[in-house]
Amino acid sequence: MIDKNFTYAIVGASNNKDKYGYKVLHDLIDAGYNTIPINPKETKILNLETYPSISDYEGVIDVVVFVVPPVVTEKVLEEALLLGISKVWMQPGSESEKAINFCNKHKISYIYNACIMLNKK
Image (cartoon, rainbow, N blue to C red; front, side, top):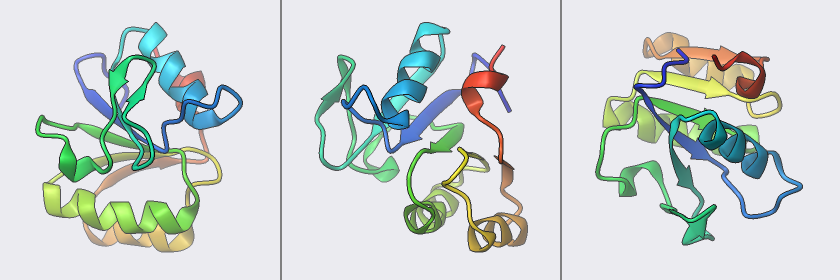
């Protein structure tokens, strides 16, 4: 699921350097990945245009990376399904049994309980 040709939407991206939403986004950018920050409260993060939701981005999103509480993950998964996004990465703490069951039911490939920053190539 880690591929430099993919576009990664980082749900929970942040301008706060202490938050994992910032750290994940920054790390993926530094490693050369195409990233799209998603945060309804920001307009730019790390000089990238930031979108309020994955639906607001007009390009193709290959993987949604969640760095948010499980209740937000569960809501955005429904949006991802409607957009035809079939790959998600739930950072530790963003997953839930409900989110995992949703992915299984709708044949969405997922990774959880693993940090994307430690698994990129």
